[in-house]
Image (cartoon, rainbow, N blue to C red; front, side, top):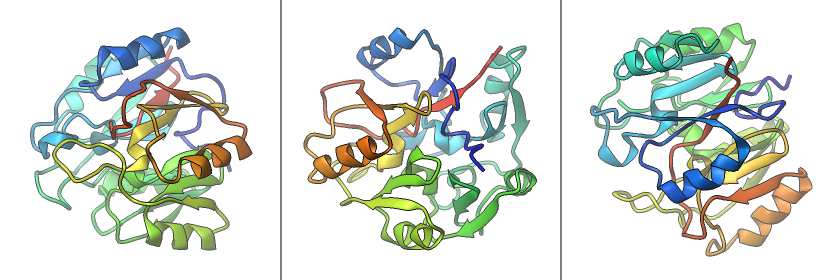
Length: 248
C-alpha cells in the first residue's frame, strides 16, 4: 500500500509550513507555484515547536487532515472550499511532554508508528480506517524523528525506531543524532527538516553538509532517485515537517 500522505504521487499544489520560516526559504519554494499555507502559533505548546505543522496536524491522506482543537478554527477557515476535509481532534495539546505529541504520528508503508499511549483517539480511529497497522514505540515525536524518503524507506537518528521498522521490512538509514538546529532545544530531528513535494522531489530546510553522515544521506536519497532541493545554504533547521496536499 502506498497511500502515504507524506509522499505525494504527483506534484503537490499546496504545502503547510512553519509560519516563522525565513522569506529566503519561501522564495525557493515559489518556483513550484505552490499555494503556501503558513501555520499559526499554537500557544499551548512549548515555544520552539509552537508553529510546527506536525505537532498540530496529521494528514490522514492527501484530502483529509486531523487538527488539534487548539488551532482547529484557523485551518477550518483557511481550507474552506479547497476540497480538504478538516477533522477536529479530541486531544487539546499542552506544554509538557507527552501533552504535545498526540498528533505527531510517523507513517511508512502500511504502518503508523507512535507511542500509542498518548495518540489522539480520533486520529487512532482514522488510522485504523486507512487499514494501517499501529506500531508502538516509546518515542512520542515519531513524525519528527522520521524523514520519509520512499514508500518503504526512511532516515532516522532514533535507534529504537530503526530496530523496530527494520523488522517490518522498511529500509532505514540510521544517522547520528544532533547537527540539526532547533532554537530552544539542544538539537532538532531529521524528520522535521523536510517534506516531499512529489515522489521524486524532497525539499530540505537547509544544508546537511555539516552532518557527519552527509554522504550516507545523499547516497540514500540517490538510491531512491530522489531529487534533493536545499532551500537554504544555512545549517539545516527542524521546522516540523513540510506537509504536502492536493487542493482544488
